[in-house]
Image 1 (cartoon, rainbow, N blue to C red):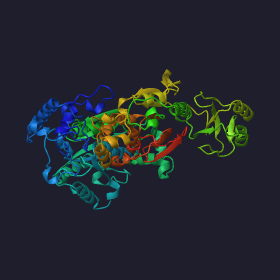
Image 2 (cartoon, helix red, strand yellow):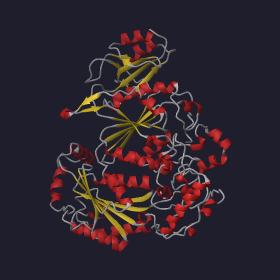
Image 3 (cartoon, rainbow, N blue to C red):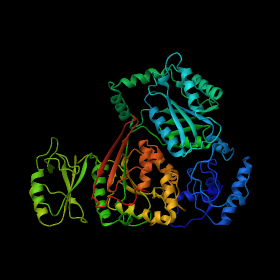
Image 4 (cartoon, rainbow, N blue to C red):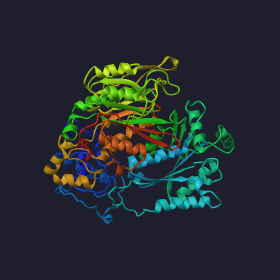
Length: 636
């Protein structure tokens, strides 16, 4: 239990990770139970995701006493404080499952109950999207093994029985009554039932579109599988401003004629019965989402930890399109010296990335451009020849005025892209591009330094409201310092501050504890055992008095919930480890593989997704190019 009690220790005030400031019992059981393995001493290689640093002996003894009392109250065998003060040992092999029995108490029952959620509602309400997002959330943030069951795949006379057998096989595949002794511990199993084609699934008992069917589903799951059921109903009216756009996208994705889906909805309404508010279904656990997160009604959802987390997450989700941009800070002084952590400022190259990111934010994130490129003509190159041969005043169809690329230049510059901004040497502010090629040549020949050109594919689109997030560390704030914040007028006399800077400590880089300010080569020399353990389990390894990737996942839960609610494009300026987890969550990558994702410096990654299940990724390299691509963070 020593490894579970370390969260009670007081850490230095500077850069103390948020995960360490949790109540005592939450530190002992962060997920509501005591996950394996139970080992005494300073368990740095802890794959369960518990938090904390090793305190002094008196604090450990007191914490062990609290843990022992909690275990005794839960019916477990209490351990004396002396038993938690054993010799510091670290087992590199997982313990045998024969010695790990399920421990009751500390709210751990919700991790062992079989759970089935059914997403219901009229057609074209985004039920499939909600099911996919809930699956992703439970897998990534709570470690559940989640399976989606599409009712349409179990049609026919024996479809209802086949669905029941499929659910039974899923739950019984690993039902051994013990906690699994694997490298990555699974919290439990969770099934989600939904229909891709609601109208086609209306004859199935598992469709849940009537009061009788919901009652049958609840009783069948309880009697046959001993599973707890939750119903999620989605109701949407025509007052939602994004409704028409979503319907149009669905019709295009399915190759249907405009208006076809509205006819399907009208026909299905004749048979559909909403969850009743007259008390006749109050014994069920359910939640109603009215226009997604505009109004939420829950019933019997808040009695358990898992039910409350599901209610909170689903009340944030909507199926409408959204765009997220993620970028690491510009190159920092620590990146140059390949050191971990710290709160260093930007290097000269990092300060050059900041104005380029500001131009990107104005023309792409806020201005609606799809293509963006920064091209640098070096001081040794013949600028006049390059400009005269590659630029023209002849616009593409639909464009007027300005200077355009006659051919592809490389570095993202394509034929027809318009020159909008120039920079006369590194460190200088960007300015509007001249109107003629002759004027640009005259500027280029007027000095001997490099000339940076900014090209976009379109100019003058309607301004789009956008958001800006950064961590609380200096290097991300300096990267965002030059992003402009104009005021955009909104209907009804309201206004929007463009790219208003929001700072979140939960986006701070992983805290390396005792290894802050060291390079990995220094860590290997000073503590080769820790270097070996981190390589063995990068996800679960916790730096001495520092954090692990599990701690990052825990503190990203709330910001990712907030991100789900937004309609506006959002730029997140963060760090290597943070963006690995953000990228993995948004793209559906397993968190076990996320630790090896490459998030390069001076690059913006755009992720576009919506309720149709499509995901598009675009990467923009803004430069300047680093001479040494190794920034010391690849092993982070």
